Amino acid sequence: MVEELPSVFLVGPMGAGKTTIGKLLAKQQGREFLDSDWYIESQTGADIAWIFAKEGEAGFRERETRAIDELTQKPQIVLATGGGAVMSAENRAFLHQRGIVVYLNAPVDVQMARTAKDKSRPLLQQPNPKQILQDLYSIRDPLYRQVAHIIMPTGHTYPRYMVNQLLQQLASFDMSAITAPNNRS
Image 1 (tube, rainbow, N blue to C red):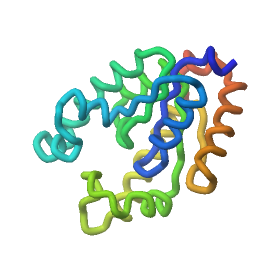
Image 2: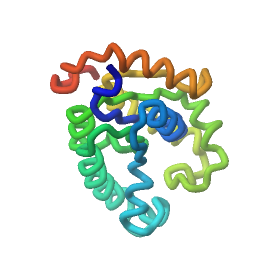
Image 3: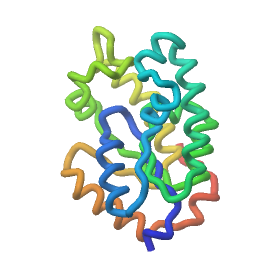
Image 4: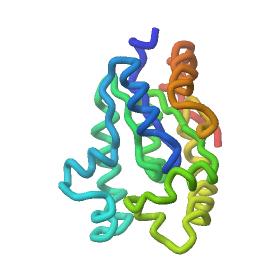
């Protein structure tokens, strides 16, 4: 039964819908929704763009790993992670071993459409954001797949319909997959 499932962690690129799907899923399951980027901002009192500007990506990633460690230990939550959270092997282990990881797989064109006017994404404040999204997707897609227990394509249907599809997959989820290492690449 879905209520007995462990926490659900959403991974995927920026613009994949992790926050939207996460909020809807949490509401459907009567769980708390958390977002690792929001959590970092609340802990530091600074937004992600400021942290990137002052500490660089490496400084932000250190903060992110601490946040992922703390958040993945909370019971019965739905967590949306930042797009780059999977870059750390430590984060991938925390996620994969402590809950059900759902990869929301959004094609680059979907990401571009959803992030085109968003000035709060430091990695996209470059001359060619589409190329950056493509490069990030090429690097990160194998890592998302490696950590995921469930892979869901996004960008082609309404969020509520996606959540219903996800709930069906969670209802038949094999709990032994959480403790077993995921060797897919």
